[in-house]
Image (tube, rainbow, N blue to C red):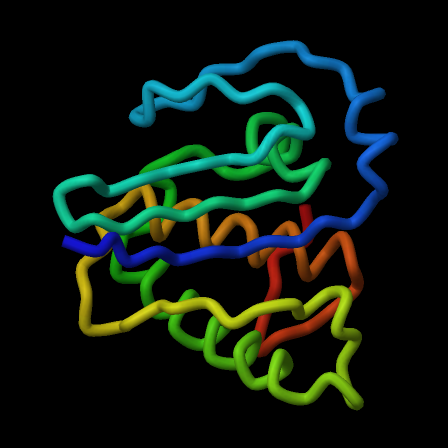
Length: 146
């Protein structure tokens, strides 16, 4: 069976500077994954065969140090925000003359009719918060400042 994936990929610095990042390890709860600062963050719902891979050098550190803890928001809240933000994100990907194509590189395959589970929604939501604050973008509505 082909594995469907949700990818958010932003490579924002050159490869040489990725190698200069520190590699202190942090374990994310509920994932059994260890990430190094600057390494890709992967969260998967193997039962549904979906995964999220985020490549953005500052995100893993931000997720551990700044994001609100898991279960702060309900899954329904996260899904609603993700539906709106991903829709706007995908719209911007299709308008490279209007929006920076280095920020909006590829669409996100997010189907609001699929239950991706809490962890996948938590990760997408927090990346969208991080992205909007870090790159001074506003996808839609209120964006928490963190």
